[in-house]
Length: 221
Length: 168
Image 1 (cartoon, each protein chain N blue to C red):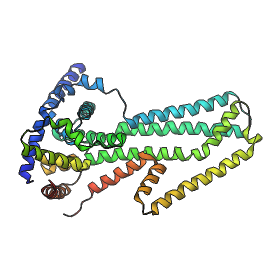
Image 2: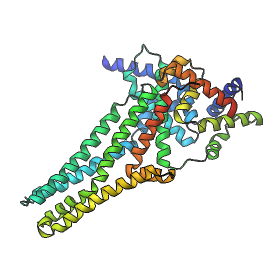
Image 3: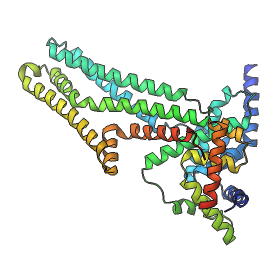
Image 4: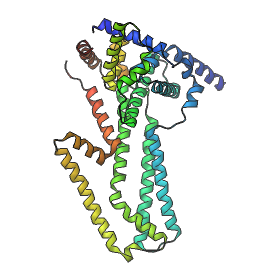
């Protein structure tokens, strides 16, 4: 198709879509817009969920403090869980405020880079939060038992040591699978492992950053 | 007094928005074909415009400001929708939603379908460039809207023209 034909076709397509449009000038009125903009976007919903998750862990720790624990191991488990809860809330808050600061009136490439960077930060925080569960289940179990005045470390220290060893093995195992997939020629496997290890948010954010860099790059004709 | 100024501001913006609304609809036509998506995207763009309006600098062209917001929202919308659905809607299904509005002339219809397919296959940034090119936007303004250098715009447009000739 020649370029003049293309522009004429574009014009025809626009006119045709305009005729068949249910989109009307009415939709742009402030009241109408405000009435329909009550729902949160998925990334914002993710932050709300993360804040609630953090609050849940802080409440668990608070319940433990209410029992006035004396055993050092139980106190340390409470501190770990409380720190995890605070970490969840703080990172969610940071991502939320970064999202609110994004200027949609900025040049497309810089605004989209900003959004992808926020998604990347969120993805990294999810990755850290997820990997920490290789160990975090131990203080959580200690805390839950501490609530009924049982000191797991005093009664069955082997559970904790086995848990720590399993956690280290799990962490190394995850890293090994990732390294193996990076070197593998199987693109499908590489992609699946990347998504499983890094999570969808981080992988997508990194892909988007690459896409933006490629678009920005000046290459000769 | 401040209420009166705010009301006048709102009225000014409403008038500007209505006179420039083809920018919104053209952006939507470039990124969405399913009717429900088109309505959602229109609402999101309008919401973002209303939100950004208090910070609008009147010394800058309104159309450039509006294009930036419309394209930024549309690109984010497309990325989010594709990610959420995880499955692409077959293009034929999307075209079906608008097919009743397409021209009846068989030759013209065929051309529109080919253009439609070409646009749909383009990544989000290239679609933005294509839209601005088809709208005869000056290259300097395209560079300002997209945030890339004018020479990069010129290179990309040349490449785009070559592909259009070869692929459509």
